[in-house]
Length: 301
Length: 269
Image (tube, rainbow over all chains, first blue to last red; front, side):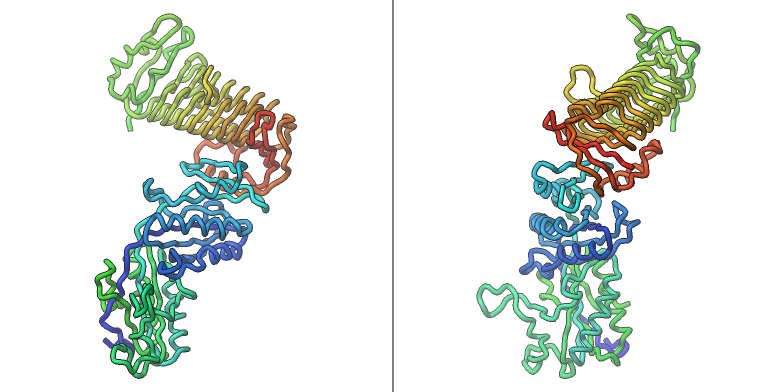
């Protein structure tokens, strides 16, 4: 299908069921909330080796946060509740507790006991007996003495069902045009609520396929979309395409991922063939691994 | 919503135990059965119909004309609403675990003692032992909320373990005596020996205090939880205005160290 001169391949993104949680981190200024958010969601691009995928969902004005200070909403995604809890615990302790002036709250509705993701519940022991708790409106908060005052942290958060691995592949004439298109599309997709783009700047250049010729490699380069290999029989790239970039989307629901993909498609199609974009496709594993299939032709704006 | 009204026929003959007048208990009865309900009076009983004119229909709300000799109003309440026009006697809302008891006037001794849940609001003053412990009990209040517009007597929040007490006016002596946890907000001046023997919990007040020697002065501090508390209070009805507008900055004392405690006194400007 050609739209505004851009090939929209009849393909689909294959996404997986995940567990997610949202944390709200506040600080004295938006910049310090951002520092904490960036650190806590750093090294969280792919569950393949990072343990979780995470990102800053959006910045929050003071009137939207529990303590009336500027903040950020962070989303964390993992393959299960256990590993999600472990990842959140270590990131909270090393990246949010340590950041000056921060406080941390759950950003999801109260859930069942088996969905519990501990926050202050475990971190309180850092207080070495000097920690205090407060129960306000049915939620427990821990106050841990730290060198700049007190770290205020909700006792726990909860995991919610989520979808990870929605994606768009942008095929372009040149590396810079692919990068500009990916930047614009990532900006458009970030405006959609309940999603994060976990890779640096929202964009990934080393898309992977499952498996490798080497033992012990769970994933290896997606050679069908590598332009330097486009002369090989298994290449999926036409001669004009010199650069491919991927945008990966994790969302709290399939509808959120779909909305983000639609926003990305709308942005790319709007830029037109004249901007150097040759086409858009999506990555999948034959449809056998992930329960969620996002067909590009069904998501067109 | 069904409302049952009980108006006093005249002055009470003496102290009356009003604990049976709970909405959920009366909901299953008709007016005639309610009028025949025996209320403890001295060594004997008196029928509710002899003291009160009944009107309306029994349901989730009871409206009661109050009197300072009407004891145990809302004691053991676990749901529904009791609204009292005027004062009540002693032990109102003792052992309450849910629902609302709204007293327009003042309360006597031990209002909200051993409370476990629900909300008690007092338009006037509260007597001694507000939100305290029943005699011989190790724990006092373990949940719920007590909001008093006026002042309160001695030993407010004695042996408190959880929950919130907010007093708009002054508090008497021995506030939060042996407090284990929870929050006590005093909009006026705290009395003598505030926090004696407290092990944990928070006593928050406005203005100056000369704490007991068991409290260590930790100076002025920025406490982010205060703005969270203030936001929580702003979402509640009936919080005394003097307990609102916490700035997030407070002078903090830790104690009572004579009892190994690490509770806090917070003086908010």
